[in-house]
Image (cartoon, rainbow, N blue to C red; front, top):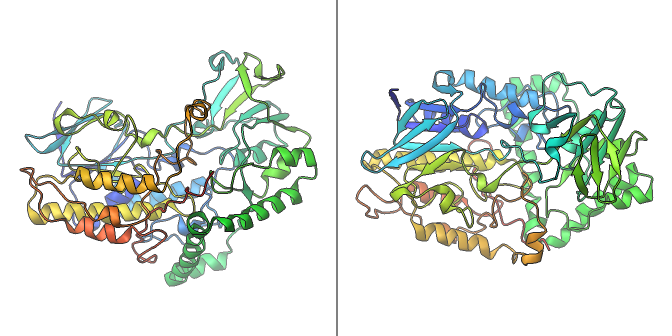
Length: 523
């Protein structure tokens, strides 16, 4: 089979991959291909379409800064509107001819002789390009916990991230396993329709009210006619969410205010003291993902919904058996158990300089300079890489910061006539050390052994957090075609200057921000 050659290859057609493609076109680079394993764009918002699925970031902040959407119908957009928005971006920026559907990445190898990435997809197609950009989606690979007997269940078993079209659970007994961000949206939709809903909870989460509402027609007309009005709305939303980093990073005692609001929210919606106690977390707000909902607690107060706090011992053909030996019969198992993050490794094999496999490089911990470049992997750029997860605002701000960084790096390659660019090991190590210094001491062996085998989107993608100072970023250099070290490129200088905690450069155009060490206050 012939090899399709391009200047740039992008893996993934979600927000990250499509945003990168738009950036390339705006920078005058039109020779690129987007490899997408599915048959449509959308990433997370193509796959997650369970009843009630919606974003938990305000709509005006959950779009590209350069492509505001005046057509949102709610303050927090439902999944199908986000998918439609991405499809609109594909049409507007004429990305269709660049898309290669059904092209799951099987293997990508750096060829030092030619200075190109040689890529093989699962369907046998071959591609080649000097630059490879992986749009890693943290919410793309559903995870199932290790529970005995999962394969023995005789009924229907579905994951929230693989919801079958047209599935009707009316009148059926449903066991929902997990109480994270998907479950709190799904359970209220099932309550009152299913004959019985059993919700299996391992640990409760902090839940705050969700400021959701329908947007008025006059608001949409205003935003469509006067885009600056929507920029103001976006800016207000941005600063409101950015302020959340203050208690998470600088003033942990202020977290008590959020906890007090969450407790008030719980008391106002759950009258039963015993049920309230089981729904009250014993960790500090912000140690894991804070959830937003107005209808989750009322659903749990219904007589046809039972909150099960006992741990699951096994799955039987008839249902779920908990540690106390009680078997609850179910017709359907719904797994709201998150995703396999594991450092956000790209699917397939990825081999860099001197035969270094990325899985081997990340065996102990996933590390990347600013979550974007990895020593030993020339001309490889990661979007949504290690330590880029945000706990207080929109991940699109991080994505756009990375787009600016990668755009500068590609311009450096062109202007200097370099064949490859690669982060120096000492720069990556300095960033890692800076991250580690902000991270609390790891748990002991006993605590580690008690952990689960999977990670969810609420969990940092490795045992390190994002850089909270620019000191570690100052040493970033490139490696030229002969292995020499020319002066630091503009890409590193600009992005290093942008990596102050909770700081943005211009929210109305190209938002540039970096995730602060927001988890250091956890105990």
